[in-house]
Image (cartoon, rainbow over all chains, first blue to last red):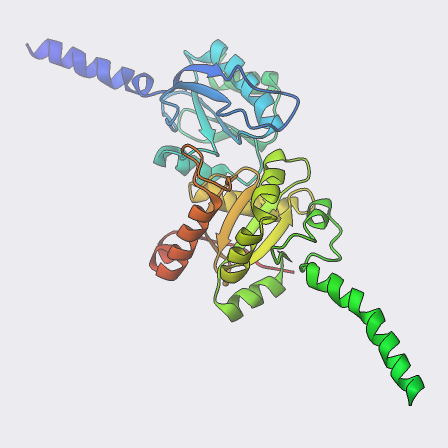
Length: 150
Length: 185
């Protein structure tokens, strides 16, 4: 009887970050990449309120909905998610909608007032990349790969 | 005597149009930025960002209503058209706030400060930015685009402005949650 309990406990402890992580990230298909139009949230998914999750690298995008550069970075974000979702935790912070306390912690600590803002945090939460503006995917992938020890 | 009267009359007549023009303009006259120039003849008594506006807010004990926008921002244009050029809305604003307008493109560092403040307070931080600030420079409430009338889950400008006034009167909430801005210039 004790063994199944222990197994469930181990499963929960290892799976917890994944269970509460953002999943099924999708790019808003109505985005107009040629203007600063307001097209709604740039990225949708389940549990888009999640914050930093320890134990693996985290990619964070802080964006505004009516921002041309944020839209372009959102597209890269979903591409990166589709490639690294099993190894990297993705955090999506929409500055135009109310944010969870976990996301507010990231906003308070890192957001300087310019969008988009991109962060890559290591498994312990130390920043590996912390810049405002668009960033090419290969730059982020290099950081991911170093952080993942590849 | 007659000549003096005539000169006085001519002098007065030439001054009337100038006085009239000044009465129709707000404190944005002489500003260089396109977004502020566009608002010079709005009925809202806009001030540019700076000490003068804060001194007036202190003297009148009123909050500052801050509008940050840009000429290329369609939602900023919509707020200008629907709210800030509406006579009744302008009267309400002029009666209860010291209104200040800032051009996003002309003052990127200043605007970054406002956007960070709204983000830290878990308020929308895009454009247009509608903020409410105490006379001593604490940003305590705000929103993004606000329609003239309540639309779906979007409150109207008037509803948000009323809430801002209520919070300003209450004050205790402001002490609990606000963001101190740097007021220079």
